[in-house]
Length: 535
Image 1 (cartoon, rainbow, N blue to C red):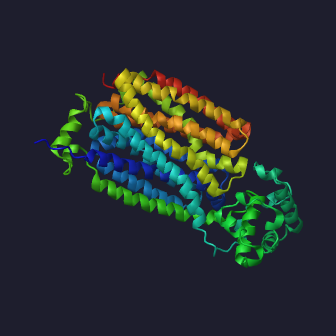
Image 2 (image 1 turned 90 degrees about the vertical axis):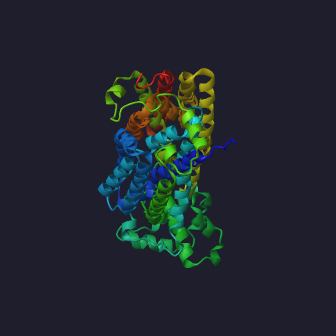
Image 3 (image 1 turned 90 degrees about the horizontal axis):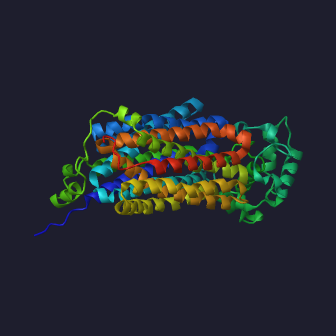
């Protein structure tokens, strides 16, 4: 009698995918929240870029050691510890009171997340037969991208939701960030400068503004019932503002009227008034941290280091997994193979591919919300939606890319089965990012960046599969080595973004991303998954 194999390997891939969801949820949420954090902690954009970049530098430095720790002590224990760590440090970010507390918490978050993908890759290698690794890696990568997409959308919604209608909307002294910006023609990059209704509103407010009593004079204006009648487009307001605007003026309460006027005042003088929704970023990050602790406990309860250690795996499934893996699959030493990594041209091509890939990619997951606010004056919830769409659609491309790399490898061998998706998939990325400076609307830019994200993520499973094909027992170290360089690229891109925007505006950042993707594609085509690290 033939006993059917159990399917615990699918459950392991599922919990690894859930870990990836939380990984990106915690990582990406700051890109939507950062404008509120800057205002709350009185940071400039350069300081905020250092905060965002600190994550990637820490993430890079921790990649190889964290991957090795997972090989040494097992992916079950280490992934659970990593998840606990990044959840706690995410809560520390919510508690930060100044720049140094924020950058330290963000650095520690990056350090604790460093081992997640190398550990997940090791888990997939141990639990999935060779022929299905690309697809399994794609499913785990899907979780990360889905979490990133959800982070943008959910963060925008939660930030607004955590500021109830009962919140006092009248200004207090700390709410006036830049008094000199209260003028008929403030210096701003926002597209609403050309809006006639906004210009008229600025002139009206400035006519009643008293520099000797700025808070009192602005609060008098907030209590005025006719601000909204200036003709401001409600599409520029968050959901709470739009909801109040739909109420006839005669039926609004005084509190609703003040809140609506406060949101319009913030729209008229961006950067001058602390945004009312800024009170929502801290509780939002608390929620994400608590959710990470719960998923980490679930992972530890379900996962095991090896199939033969799991009490739910029957002999038929064990034979299916181990029989589907190549001889010598787990050969290699227990120490980090630094010499082999440094001397391998193949691993350097792989690392260059990752370095330049992340230079282009980091714009989407960190700077895009700021770009949309500054160039197109997109409100917070719509920014969340616009940055969600590319990541959400791209998440499905990871599954398709995993299927494609397995099919290509079966037909043409792993040399081209991995290199083609890593290389040729970058061509649409180049074209899409290079087109962005010439597109007239925010939604047109979102469409172009969606093409970039889909193409980028189509090639992502081949990256994991390359590390699994060439790494032997050291798959965590191989993927960690390449991810280290990739995240150095992301950190460098963020630190240099401030200078680039000063020299060439946002167009300079977008064009530099296109150039980076071109270099990335060339390096990807030069990789050879047939040549193992220990060959």
